[in-house]
Length: 133
Image 1 (cartoon, one colour):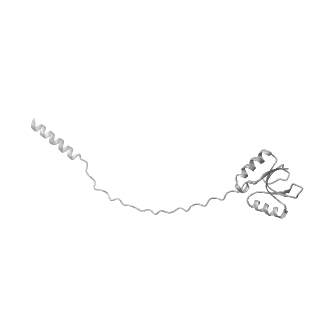
Image 2: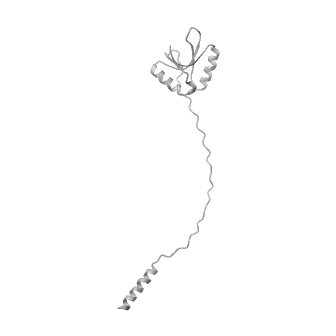
Image 3: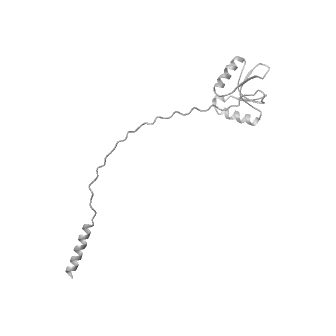
């Protein structure tokens, strides 16, 4: 019986040694350097000019940006605002002859007030005011 046990133990050890996973030699790792391309930043698309219905002298409420005593100067200023996307209008309102430069006009008071508030958010238009005709 000792021989049977010895043979059994020897067989188990032989089996265990033969089942041991074989070590694989380390593989060569090849490092490939990739070319890094810098991406040029895309220019921002131009900001669209504000959609402006323009000034209708028949309207009741006007957003006025300034008043001038010389009509030619008022026209020059109107051209500068037209280049910024407005469709201005010039009209004379009082007996002293002041030419008012209006950027927008409305028949509805609430629309005019909202447009004035929105316009005044830009510091360039902070002195605009609402005139009732």
